[in-house]
Structure formats: structure tokens, C-alpha cells
Amino acid sequence: MSRPRKWSLREMLDSIFSVFRGGITWRATASRSSPWQTIDYSHRLWRRQGVWQA
Image 1 (cartoon, rainbow, N blue to C red):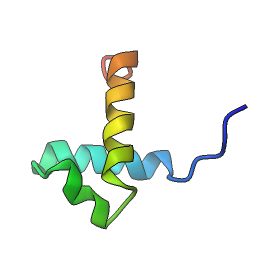
Image 2 (tube, rainbow, N blue to C red):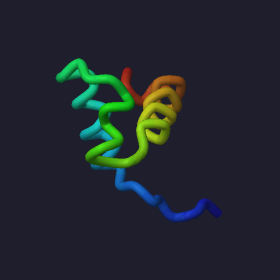
Image 3 (spheres, rainbow, N blue to C red):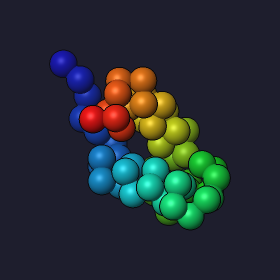
């Protein structure tokens, strides 16, 4: 059983999209959402799992 999420998926997706649309760095997302390490980890995990291609 997994633990409950501390950050919402919507919040993480918004941060990932802002990185790609706005050209900001991962570290710049930390001031307004979940920690940049969490966002970067989720993006890399989803990329490896093929989420973005689907």
C-alpha cells in the first residue's frame, strides 16, 4: 500500500508544463509549488514509463 500524496498531480503537471512552456529551470518552480526535486523525479519517472508518449 502506498502512502498518500503530499503534492497534487495537478500541481506537479502545472509545474512541468511551465518548465517547458516558459523555459524556466526546475529550481525556479520551487517557489510556487512542490519542491523542484519532486517535480523533476516525477517527470523522469513518467518519461521512463512512457506516459508522455501515450
